[in-house]
Length: 178
Ligand code: FEO
Image (cartoon, rainbow, N blue to C red; front, side, top):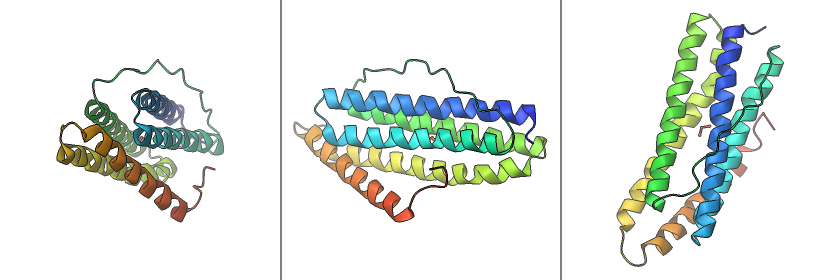
């Protein structure tokens, strides 16, 4: 059975993952409104992924006799200065999530909760991959530059990144939380 302390911390992580899902959904809507279909697809997939991150903790809490709380999600921003600014915001949010996972791991040590520590290893790897992906995207955007056709090429590039992610996920097979 999980301690109340750890249960509370994991419920906070559920809220953070849930917010990420809504933030990326909001970004998908903005991309659509700007005619950036490739970026919109990318953000829809990221949003769905974050929902799975949330559910994975949700299910874990049930498994260890804790109580998973459905979080109240605050309204995410729905206007972005540019596609560059939007990806910068994604990267910052991912860094915040990574810091939160690291905090959770420290709490596991304090509470001698080896089970949750083991469970969270998946998130450690996931965050490393997410941060690397976002840095890669920001590098590509920088390389394309801000010439007259840049948005067209950025959208094409993000569409290709999205297709590669879909292919990689299909190769990995369904996650254990499905
Ligand atoms: Fe689940 Fe991308 O943080």
